[in-house]
Amino acid sequence: MSKTMAETTAPLTAPAPLTLWRREIWATLRLSAPLALTQLAMIGINTTDIVMMGWLGPEDLAAGALGMNIFIPLYLFGMGIATVVTPMAAQALGARDFRGVRRTVRQGFWLTLLFAALFSLIIWNGRWMLLLFGQEPEIALRADDYLKAVTWAMLPSLWFVVLRCFATAHSRPRSVLIITLAAVAANAVGNYGLMFGNFGLPRWELMGAGITSAAVSWLMLLAMLVFVLRDRRFKRYA
Image (cartoon, rainbow, N blue to C red; front, side):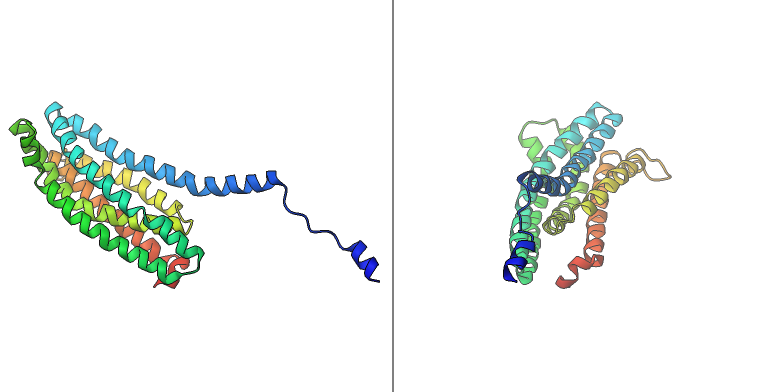
């Protein structure tokens, strides 16, 4: 009897190595492709700003580019700090330490708040940095219009990265991509209105570009927060 059962029982076989590779590659692409496209979309926002600054004229383009060269390196530094949330949250999630995930995200918010305050102070006084490095006073003054407005984009931008990393740790990057793509369009429309005085809006030129960047950054943060609060996977952290 036992011999018959042994003969009729099918042996357990491991998946073929090629099948395992296909699964791993597909899983990696599902996670990495939206993340890569999100980064390209973020570059698209900055590229749109530069192109539309060029429409204002060479002096405004030079001033706007100088302003962005102050803002973007500081933002990238803060983003590098915020992205630590992804591996730490993923490790805690793998260990089913949901309290650890919550703690990681909370500390990410506090840390980026600290750096955003420091960076905002630097950006707000960016005009004096430009003068110190020998830029023409008129160009520095025009750049100051942009810098004063875009200062308010630093905090929401870094907090958006924290939430983006939190969603990525849960393999939910598509929502981040959708929000970022919408932000590219919103940024272009906002620039067209506030930089050039279209849609019945005032013509604020470089300051309009900075205001648009700040407004879009806050809207991105709000959209990401709504997604996190409504997604059932994140209910356990409420």
